[in-house]
Image (cartoon, rainbow, N blue to C red; front, top):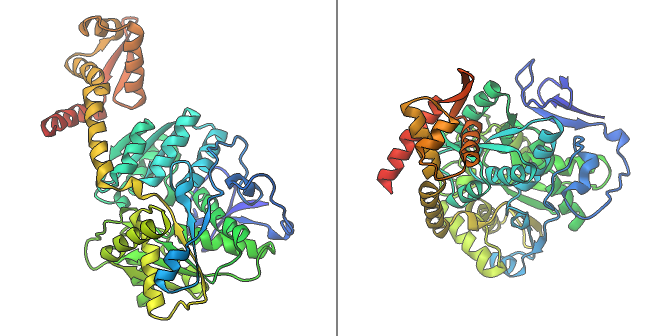
Length: 467
């Protein structure tokens, strides 16, 4: 039996529809299972994400690119450089869109289809948006992505090519999450923001399951922390495997943040749950740039319950580690992932991690998503979009902004340079993206601009000035 349960007051809710806050006390909800009925479980099928269906909420129509089953790479050369014997890298860059978020995208898109949704919304710093955009494209769903001003360009490029509807809101992810939460309530869209959907935890915990099947339980498991959700997910996975008798011991969990944005580390160091930042958060490891982590208490619980550690590292240490991983092990990790190696080096130097200890570092995403080269390519793609795809749509928006009109009249004003079917296809896409709305007048279907449509027109004018 599966249920949603409040971690504060233990109130229970049905598995679906999904909610993430307790209606009684406001506590976070998590999926809970009757483990007395799940003893001696056998996992069947190929070594992929869906192998663990029996330990996830039920879905009927699975959407998959073959996610999961990622390598646990023994990093011998890097281990020798750091001064330990047994270091393993759980390489999530080998997922279909090159990050661990593909697990969550597969589960949420599958659930969205089961529940009859056509549109998903997600606030994201990058990886989750890229994954959801890809899985939505495969399934014919519309993916609305809310990104903060600070986002890795390589991840934005993926969202663009998968045809996500992208909207910028706020400086950092915290503001984008609040906006996405309110927008989902207003529109009824499927909420796929990782901090606001407990299915994400269920998907990410399978990383721990795979580690056990590939190696066993290491002495230490090192995870980078933004919202704290990944740390909590991995810990939940190990604990569940212990409950069903798959493992006898548990690893000590190490949480890592950038020194410029370390609210969970601050709370750990002070021994209390506030963990406020003394200044505006700042780090080049954008995937972990979170000012007010929603999973902070749960991440702290994982660290403290496992007798683990919390470590802050500088951006300089992160980028040095990124180069070492690539040079010594041939894995190009994104900065937030490289932070785990930077933390490992610190703990070895402090004699907290011993030479003979076994260590797993989680590599969540590819560095190919965060390079200057990809920033340049993305700018070129944006320019191409403005010059090609937006040219016709801009003309249509501009015509409608001057005078509300209908399809045939639009076709004439565009100079009859395309088929009427193509004009109506553009109108349907503009309507789907909320830029225009239709209404009946004198037996004809007229179109007028929405507020968003007017904002887009102004944005195009500003973008042309920059280009």
